[in-house]
Every structure is written in C-alpha cells, then in structure tokens.
Length: 382
Image 1 (spheres, rainbow, N blue to C red):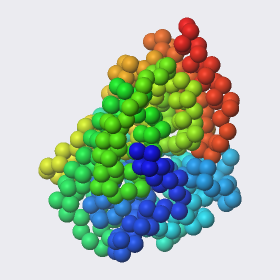
Image 2: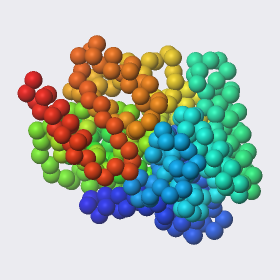
Image 3: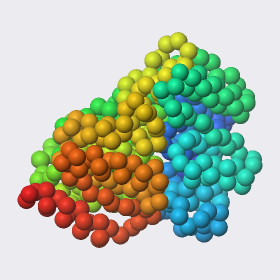
Image 4: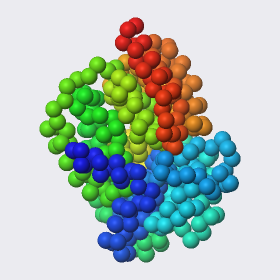
C-alpha cells in the first residue's frame, strides 16, 4: 500500500505529465485532451481513442512568472497556474483543452488559452443551468453531439455508438469502485485516511480508465488487509473544494488535528454521478439524462428542484458527521456565494461549522492548524 500511494502522489504532483507522455508513446496516433475541472464527458473523449486528463492547475510545483500579466489580481490560483503551465510549455503533451460552465474565471481562461495557443483544439462545453426545463435534455445532447463531431475531426475517425456504450460501462465500473471506497471510508475512517483516498482517486485524472480501475481494486485489497485502531477524532464533512484542490499537506493537517473526514468534494468529477449511466440505447441521450438526473449536488451545477443547502444537511445526516469544515479556495466566487446559504442552514440545524481559506500554492499551515485544533477541542469538550 505504501508503494501504491507513493506512486499516486507522484502522479498528481507531476506537472510534466509523464503518464500522459508515456501513453502517447505507446499510442503513436493517440491524442490527449485535458479538461478543466469540475466535470467533463470523459466517455466521449475516451470513445474517440483519446486520453482524457483532468487538469487541476500546478499546485505548488510551479512559480508564477507569466500568468499574472494575463489576469487581474483577484483570480483564484488554479486559473493562473493552469495558464502558467501553458505559457511554460508544460501542456505540450496535449492536443486539446476542454472547459465548461464553472465560473467567469474558468470561462475567461478558456478563451485566453485559445488566443495564446491557436494550434490547439480549445473548446467550451455549455452545460444547462435550468435542469428542470423540458428542453435541457435535447440542448445538452446537442452539445455532446457537437463535441463528438469536433473530436472526430481531430482524431480523423468516427466515434461509433458501440464505442461510447463500452466507455460508459468502463467508467461506470470505475465510479462504482470509488463510491464503495467512499462508503467504506465513512464507515471505518480509521482504516482509510482521507489523504490516501484523495491521491488514489485523483491519480485517475492522468490514467486510462482501465489502468485506474485496476489500481482501485489493488487498493481495495490493501485496505482490507490493513490493521488499524480507531482514533479520538470527530466526524467532519469537508465542503467547497470542488474545483481548486487544497494542498495535500492541508488534508493531512485536518486529520492530524483530530478530524475523521467522512465526506468531501475533492476531485468531484471522478464521482460526478450518484448511480450508473444507462449503457443501452442512444449513448449521448443517456449521458445528457444522467447529467440532469444522476449528478451529485455541487456549487457548479444548479438544480432548483433540490436546494444545495438542504442537500448539504442530507449529506451531514447520511455520513453521521458532527461538523462541517468549509475549505474554500481564495477568490472562489461559487463557493463563497453558496457559503452564505450553507451557513444559514447549518445554524438553523445547530450543526457546528468552520470556514478555512486556502490557495493551492500554500506551503505553511500554522494559522490553519491552530484554528482547526481549537475547533476540534471545542467540540470534544462542549
């Protein structure tokens, strides 16, 4: 297990995208498409015999030298470090970049990259904001069809429905394994640490789905063999880290400070669907219907039928969490807009909560450590 987790940690820290370069060397005609978080229809990319790669910025692995000149000061770190990756040649292994409706900064990043890298296929996928509308399904299916046609031109091959259905089956299996691990972690958080599950799941952003599924199965067997004793910790739910990812050291800090993280929204795109996507019939229709009806609740997906504040309370109850920690990236507008509603609902329900702000480039956590330890102690002795 130590070796497996070390390998996963190396993969997610690698801004040279060694796994992507290796895959392309093994597939001379293959192309790699990087997608900006949170969600992308990876099944369509994979069906084109391309490698979908989740792009989560550069973390603390790259100093900003050029990106600041293209964006204003009040922009989250992930947007700037992703642009820095491009301007310093680190995105060379990719043949295309895909963006979707997350926030204004992500939208602007898409077109800044398109202007700076005209040789790349850069596209913006428009996702419906009114999921209750009768026309949303047809609209989203048409967007997936447009993406499919663009990828067919780039790959110079047709994407057959059977290929799409096969990729839906493979990603269903992958997401099913991830859901099982999350459920297991919630039941026995002393056996599976949050940082371990984080690196294990996020590594899938850089690997073919079959390779990542095999890795998940290996980890599942390793966790089953592990001998671990429960610790004196409180059960917490971590919310609002759906796009920019917190430093790995910060996740470890939360656990060391006395928190069992029984639920979180890290690398949310890897488990975007709450149940399997149908693998029969029109695959684009199945993907569109699943986005509207089977997606997890998130600050970047709007569904007036199910308020996000109530969904948060449901998650707290389902995971038997004793408190909520909001881990919000600096300048993240979607997270801060929702925090106001979340805070009001938690206070109404009498659920303790703590707000922490981070940047992906953080490397010292003394102040945050003090805040978390004080919060945990207060809950232990209340």
